[in-house]
Length: 300
Image (cartoon, rainbow, N blue to C red; front, top):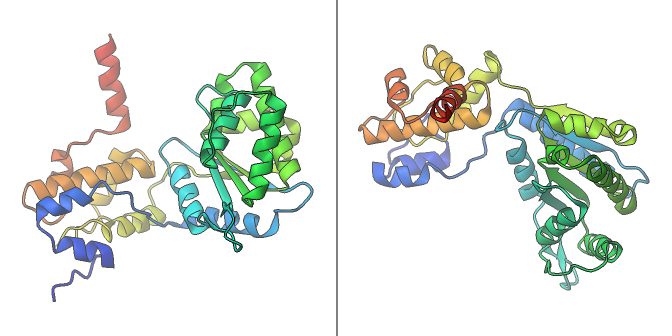
């Protein structure tokens, strides 16, 4: 039986398929573990285990550049604690509830997002206080033990009054439900939370900075290589590929993944079984800064 020692089990099976079939699988999302992600997951696990039920539970604020893995980490954690049927079989149990702060952030839109995440009808437009009570009651019923709010920096697009209402609501929900709240966002998310002294004291910041050249980046590339269904090793973590990938991706894990998927696609279309510098140069990929310059030139 043919095996490819540089690949993980799933990629090993995919690598046995014809190029056309492998191309169809490339765009599937795959979890790539790395040190900082495992540290964040460990903190989330500790928070889930120790904080629910406390009078003033601790909260987390995960901050990092756009496209740098915040949402993927949250989704990985949610899948680790999936929705299930209660022991008596009467209702669903949702230990980790994830929701996105609406682009046009208001209290009503936020409650709508919560109701969608809870799987309930959202056609109720009655009094705000009744909507709040019914949503909190349902969260208790389904056993929500942690609330994760993505794109929390959208708060800053609201008026000052609405920002205050939403920040007060976050504090109230944590106190009322006695569950930890985890917020995800770019640097502006920290600015939003910091504008409320009480919230700032409760939210412990965790940073996901841009990737820098070094041993950790080399390990990340080695992990990526195990999931790309190419039959020959590319040695991504070795020079000169290492330097080229780091420079072109500009430091975010989302761009690293996009570059490597485009390079793998280019290799398979060209009948090659490994990624080389020449393959990357021919791939259908442009770094973020180049894409921005192209758009700016078109808009002139």
